[in-house]
Image (cartoon, rainbow, N blue to C red):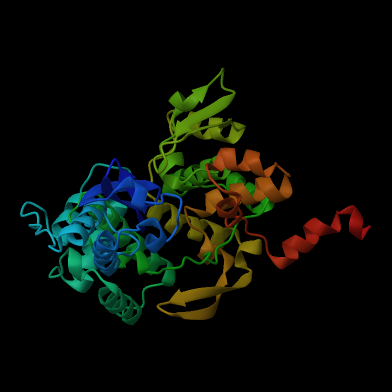
Length: 388
């Protein structure tokens, strides 16, 4: 925020600039144009009437008291009023504004694709912190208490980041609605780390597809395979039906629930087979059910699924290295990671094409999905001409 003065006829105007926006106000002062050098940069050189200059200097001093970055439009105009008159306008707080927690609850109940995550964030944060604070108390001290309590409860760094991101979103919306002027939330920090998970090899995907299964295990396997052949999230691949098949059974089209972006991909024969034997749609199984039964299926298949891998596990502020069987790390989301990894590393699909399939917006976010062990990387490099 910066300010200057200009002459409008004989009247002097105060002009404040902030973020490319200019605010103007009459100072109530006038001067002979002959005593105003508009080309001069300093106020002393610009205004050659010492009496007017002294009054402008007083405006400068008052404005400098209020001048800082990040002021709202109302705060800027109030500061200009104070600078010119010496009286700070009295602003009554909105009596109709909701409290922070009331607004958070209303925000969590909106009918949006992320409603479930919003509701969980509201319930978790209100349980941990209580609901006594209002907008002005969501400050750096609140953030420090929240992080300490999340650490004491053993929540992972990524889950803490998710909750804090939701908290900041609510504060941003509240500020836009002019429910508060508290900007300390902008200093709330959080950091996501890439989860230690796995992607399956093509041989493992084939073993799952060819497994002799029935009942719930067969339905879970079919759902999981569709995820492996579409690079979609479980919330998307679990909703696919024959109605999504277009262009004479050549493409599969659906809209991502999370981003509302349309995805168009070639339809795999495996997907067609799953739809055929399940009444024209992907079996309806929740993500937790997929994770539970896929671990059992992979354990029974044995082979590389029984390999031991070391993973870094986050417990609050601590990171622990633990050993797990590969089958223990298979979840509903493994299907999406597997598709992304196989497309990019085994079948050399260009990065841009992979992102169009998966719906990722940036290469950085897509590459977080690529899961290749050091041994797998060595096998990939073995075929490179550099090593021949």
